[in-house]
Image (cartoon, rainbow, N blue to C red):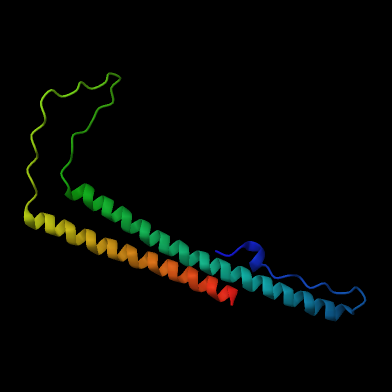
Length: 135
């Protein structure tokens, strides 16, 4: 985002000898400029916030799906004693079926594609906003 000093417009200095109406007009124009700058900044922050919420929601949904669909591992109880080292290696777990592995892969791909598109939109929006500001 732009530097705060770059976005703030300078308040025009009005000589004290000008009449009251002219001074009032100049100050009203500067107020309008400030309000416009604040409204655009708030609008930009709202868009970024919405995109962040969408991406966060996608991440939470993926986490919830994986917790529901994947088999549960062993739950560890908190103890003060260290666990003894296993003497023999544990046997390998049975592999998932090919259909299940394919479904997980497709779901992961779709969710990552959506998240990638949202991130690209955010980056594009920020770069175009910076380009407009420098122009």
